[in-house]
Amino acid sequence: MRDMRYADALHAALLDEMRRDDSVVVFGEDVGVYGGVFKVTRGLQAEFGDSRVRDTPIAEQAIAGMAIGAAMVGLKPVAEIMYVDFLPLTLDQLINQASIMHYVWAGQVTLPFVLRTQGGAGTGGGAQHSKSLEAIVAHVPGLKVVMPATPADAKGLLTAAIRDPNPVIFIEHKALYNTRGPVPDGEHVVPIGPAAIARPGTDATIVANSRMVLESLEAAGELAAEGISAEVIDARTPRPLDTATILASVQKTNRAVVVNEGWRTGGLGAEISALIAEEAFDFLDAPVARLGGLDRPIPYSEPLEAEVLPDAARIAAAVRKLL
Amino acid sequence: MRVVRLIEEGLVERFREGRIRGPIHTCDGQEAVGIGVTAVLERQDLITSTHRGHAHFIGKGLDPGRVLAEIFGKETGYCRGRAGHMLIASAEHGLLGGSAIVGGALPIAIGQALGFQVQGSDRVVVPFFGDGAAHIGMFHEALNIAGLWKLPVVFVCEHNEYGLTVHARHQSPVEDIAVRAEGYGMPGIKVDGNDAVAVYRAAADAVAGARRGEGPTLIEAKTYRMTGFSTSDQGGYQPEKEMAAWRSRDPIRRLRRALAKALAKGRLDALDGEAGETVAQAFAYAEDSPLPPAEEAYAEEFAPPRGPHA
Image (cartoon, rainbow over all chains, first blue to last red):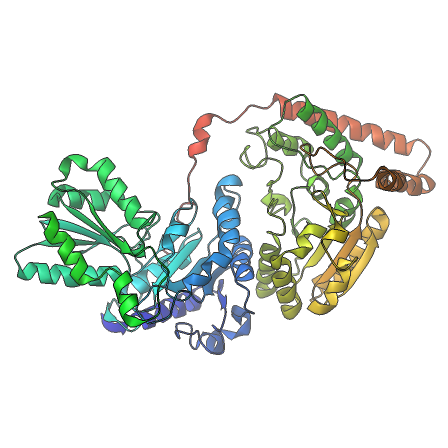
């Protein structure tokens, strides 16, 4: 085990996979000479050259389309979309092209590419650099969507994503890049699909992902001091979603709080809440509580931005209300 | 070209009889472009196609029976009936693939070419698209990058005068799309798209250059869509005089006249007869093929993993 920053764990996964497999290539805006605006791709062009690591023009539709085309002919592209707020520019390629090909072409091609991006608020990025848009892509059959919360998962899930034969939208969180945690040495693969139990508990289940896992763990710590045992599930793969782990937890605790940083209406929390209501209704001792981002653009000013986001205090309050 | 024309005539007839789902977009009058260009390509070269792709499919060597089976939604179609006539793909023939989002395959085509460049392969990619696609943003992004990186791509614009019902003069300030090539640092070639031999020669030069690593070319083939946008088109916007002028330049009749000088007497009639027989057999195969069982709708969402060390 090594204590690593989240950003360094991502870098380690890229470095290891590029050394292991010549078909892994990296391209996107500012990823080459500069090493990425969050420095996740630093040094890669120096080691692997400017054929395998390319700076692209500012052209998100082309970046997404090139990932599809290059994957189709045998490369394993890891393309970068600098902010998830720019992901809407790629949606034709993802929704009308990448997501349909395996199924509609009856398995004739596989598309082993990763679209790395990062989202989330908390750093004053404003309404075009702070969003959480995972629900838009998680809505689409044929796309996998992955959101690591810890450095270990950052490395293990990115490694799995690069090796996966399907399109993977890999959404990092800008406020997590400097967080630290233990990462296993050597090859570390975390399968895409299973959720993680970030903290076991018996009185209530908190289902979260990405940075909201950290807020949920903080809330669980506060609650523990009050004698309340909250279980925190890290639903780190919004698609495919690990429904079994979520339902098993709710069947044990009989209470559920669902937390997601994205807009509450039509968000991932709505999907998970509906799942629990449909599949575990008889086990519930209280209605499912759903926390999400306020249905507004993300405002810039600090008190405004903080107000629109779920946080540990609100999560803890939601759990208390269920008991 | 004759096979393509006969396939489309047969499809339109069957659509009118209510025997095919969805609209059919014919390339009636444009056959020389798809056939002339694909005649240059090797099997391992890739093409991307459009909603108007029958000439591309046949030119790239797909079996007409399996193409028609796909259009009839049959289990024996290239995509087991899941694609329909606008989205057909055949990996073994280098058709990857059909796309009905106008211009949507252009970024994918440059990605395929990027793959070949990184792999050091001499394979070439030919995306086909219409003049309508030359006005979308993805066209700009794709040609800019292809020119910048000297990717092995030959962009083939089938300029058929209309984007759905709107004439090109209402869609572009310039008459020729080929002039845009200069802004992307690649040659722009204008060719008579109703002359199969001229198309072949232009494509041969461009493909050879791309194969040698000299970068992309934009070929603009001037042609005309003799029938409407699709079987759903109610017409009324293509002036009769304009259509008559283009009808006299029918690419099949022109190629026939050219070949008549080179081939033995009777040979052309024999070839036409063979084409008719091929198409009749293809329709029979497609119509006799079984539909997929409804359970196939539940086919896997994702490709299965290739193991932990894939």
